[in-house]
Image 1 (cartoon, one colour):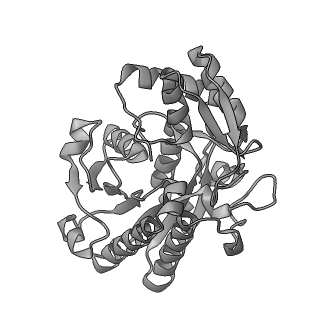
Image 2 (cartoon, rainbow, N blue to C red):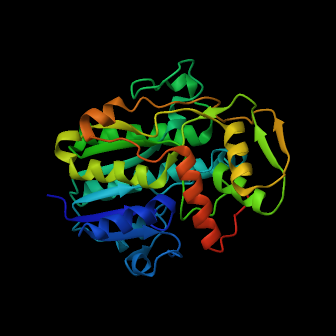
Length: 310
């Protein structure tokens, strides 16, 4: 039975919320991140400051854990197009985490992957088997495909059981990045115009509590759900233009929405097939996009958050 869990990236958006929920459920949680947790003082007290790119630094981490949830990554796709070295960081961090698990006989690992691994694949709804290396669009995508391959190889060679979760556009609390929804909320509040890169872009957006619920289901059902991958998403596509309009209307702002060309390395269309997660995990996304955006607006209104522009 899983009792003690090491969460890498514990100061990030998903990591913070996951740690909160795990602590509520009575798990013994240890966080690992290269920066303190600014959102929750209790999680910060449980967080070990460590640079996962440096294998020597992993000596700071406890060995007596039952499961590693590896969330830590440079996660802004276009940033890794501009600076591919950030993708190398992701690969090195994942390799070092898997080596840490191997050398300390930790037999359960969860790896946070991304819908980016599907690339611009010409299919309406994408299931877990629809990953093809020729559709690798960016260095970020490559780092996630490589991470998945490393996790799989450590299962084959060293018997480390795994679950790979592929997130899709997670949004909500604890996010000060310039991801689309927090950025659009910020721009509207500041009466600044919004830019959309790709008029026909449609993606699958997942409220943070739904994404975290999916991870917890994986932990609770690890024995029956292990050694495969799951899409954790809403299972519905949403136009970026419609999201911009929704935020604009919710905040009652008269700002301009401009359309620009797609940027290199970005996926243009993605809708997740979540039937496998439903069948194996009992997963479903409970929060509609409209509800999630309203909750996000309320959270940003309550907290003084400065969006970190890339």
